[in-house]
Image (cartoon, rainbow, N blue to C red; front, side, top):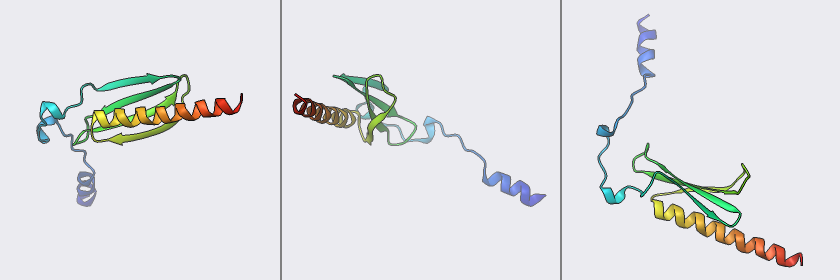
Length: 104
């Protein structure tokens, strides 16, 4: 019986609150928790994950109206995530224009 009790304690969950993490300065915090960038027929969601330390910023690109994720990534800060998402969308828009020019 003692072994079963000891094994149960090995799998206990420890909840962590903000006091357990070192605080970050205001400049390190992203400007907003979630943002959407819309360019042409593409959307990019920029999602800030404050559950991890340091903060991780995810970016997800989709075609408007489609549930399919075309590409995603994560960066260390909000500006880098936005820059990567916009760069990918710009590249894909140029490719779409190229394909349309071939069909003329």
